[in-house]
Length: 124
Image 1 (cartoon, rainbow, N blue to C red):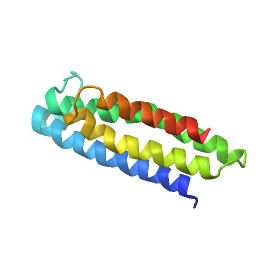
Image 2: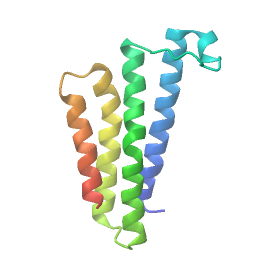
Image 3: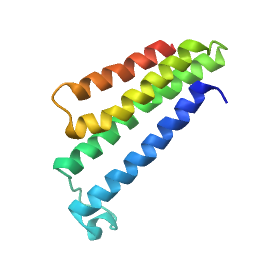
Image 4: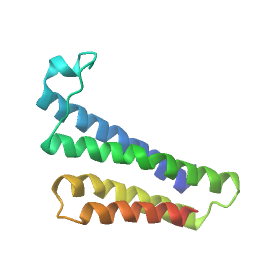
């Protein structure tokens, strides 16, 4: 498997870690009755839990673009150094995004997001 596809695998792992963290923090805030229910009535998490949930949703929003960019370069036979560099720029930016969103100063989250987007552009 190529190094850029390993970056895709790393991003999947990151998404799994984030969903685990968000599940734990949501459980702690909303309690097991709501978490285990059918969730017919929407509840919103706030504070730390809310930031973790929003960061995870942001990853899910951007992930299809990342995967599609890798798909395009692989199907075109154009994967190479730029795809590898761009893919790992994306992964590292997204790894920093979560703690930046939770604890970082104003602007750091946006910088991480923009760096991830730049990684996708580098791939293409």
